[in-house]
Amino acid sequence: MAALLPALVASFALAACDVERRKSDAELGLSPQQAAGRKIYDNYCDRCHEPYSTRGKKGPGLKGVFKNKYLSMSGLPANDERVGDIIRLGRHEMPAYSQTLSQQQLDTLLVYMHTL
Image 1 (tube, rainbow, N blue to C red):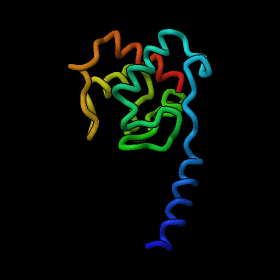
Image 2 (image 1 turned 90 degrees about the horizontal axis):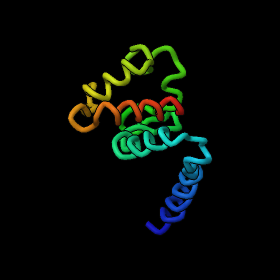
Image 3 (image 1 turned 90 degrees about the vertical axis):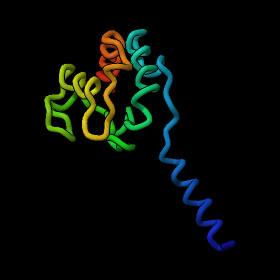
Image 4 (image 1 turned 135 degrees about the horizontal axis):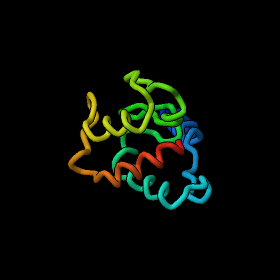
């Protein structure tokens, strides 16, 4: 057991190197509406989706989600209408947020997601 401790400490230290410091809204150049969308993202999306990485958590990473013509997992068009539908209605293991987010909150969230 004592021989495993240094290896565990080293692996945790290396894993910490992959973690990037969270940038502020100002560092990201977010507008007030985009910053408000980021707060919504933090509250509802971040637990399952990495915003600035293609690596996923429970769901896919969302870096560049609107930069591609199609969504990576579903093959649906990468546009506000389709992504909004997924957020509102859910998909596979993703819960639906139609009863949680207002249309204004959803629109604000989508504005932020365009910055990813």
